[in-house]
Length: 486
Image (cartoon, rainbow, N blue to C red):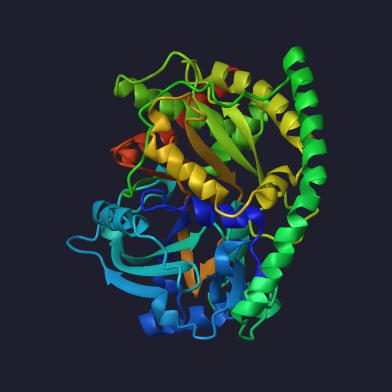
């Protein structure tokens, strides 16, 4: 039995019917590489073997009696793969419009908390025609049916870095090999306690955790005081990251509903690397600059572009720095202005690169476990109560805007990978959205292609597919501007 960390538990408490706290990924798979051909039953059985010893797939949440402490993870002794893996076929021509509509619906459904917190849909009959960079685009006469897999995992079980790790360990380097997780056990955090835990034992451990919680106050307060002092000094010197609560208001920044809409796009990683070489900026700087240009064009087309630059929260993994062994989510965050007030793509990149250097230095000065420590110290359900109050009073529509959206950039595999024998042609990540920030953009590189996944509340962003269409255009503009500066 393992107790959820405060940060992991917070994602459970934050969830409401409108605010669904799962993360998704959409895989486009080539079934022609599967040894012996594709068969759903064989695909499901191979997946069951691959996930058998990965705790995130086989354990569930159990509440502590009277909720005096955070919930615990317990092994699901009645685990059934058929509760989690489902099969569906696309209607009509099986094109991208039908796929996007189905993914919108599936992403809008909550994960069942009575079972392990994940779900996978195998979508058959997709024809991937005319999409992606010109160099990788498939013509209609060459198109073949693809399989699409949409997987959902609750944020309590996974963050961006651990999610990418789990995906990589469920994959292999050639279609005939078994997944890495079966060979090495990598990606596992523990084997778990498979015996049945009684309510009395769970309650006793919860009481002990609650009694020890006040002892952690000193560990939390002093680093926070030091951080405030350092931040004031950075503000005085002009080297602080952009502050929250000063973002301009956009259509993204109100209460959200339980509906979701997605947009998917592809670009070549070599273009990002070429811009990095010319500019001296990082790939992450280029990603944020392209996102800023795309958002500028999108909002301008809707006559909603604010004068001040949009502010993004950028999650940062602290897995290498954390002192905490427990917990699935090991993240910090930095705030970055996206240069949406700058029309010239080269000027936007150079401005953002300098600001991001200061933001990264500032973020690194924050103790790696600061967010985890405060989440651990907070009483159970504090986050949920605060969020329900925030939503009920519609503070997101009246008060200061904390941030406009969340943007993540997750490095992916540089070589082809195979999922249950099927070659991964594309992999689109989709993060959660919140009241006050109804748009999430996640970028992941895979075998030389950069995949963009945008997910939004359609009340805030009714056409995310139009938003992501601007990403390749902005990348082309930025590349042309960079080459002009050679």
